[in-house]
Image (cartoon, rainbow, N blue to C red; front, side, top):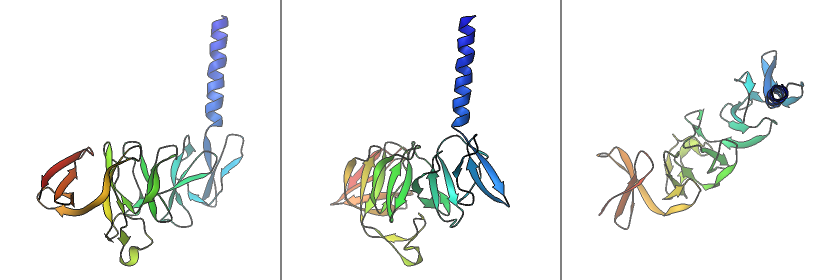
Length: 208
């Protein structure tokens, strides 16, 4: 009997903590924000496009003032990081990491908004496996000079390879070119050519 009582109390405690750890959408005149169960406002009304009725963990929210901006917001209403934008939509997670931007530089954060790869790259591809490629020194062209969108035209810089800890696996000395036969990008330096497989594995092709 005592065990059942303790078990029920434990369930009540867990449910209470879960309820306190959620935010609920409230709206007025089509402008929405989020409150906790006690009614305390955690996300100011009208600050974001509030697409979710309930928030249980940090999520990606679109700015209501500038729809080209996306942020990761936690349950305290804090902006953890600004999300990289791809063709007008927020970046997707790749192996648990997502591209983020600050002052035009790119890095990676995990699903809790913790910085994993420093914000010091001009460009970076999404992780599809253990590795990704990143660029130092590239510059956007034309009207895309202030846009993080991956569809922008970029020139210059050097490419290298990072692992999921942000460590440099291959140095930033490579040029990137499109290989029509392989339908992928390849990277060239001093006659050495390599590419990344679909799983992010470094594959050496040949020496020119």
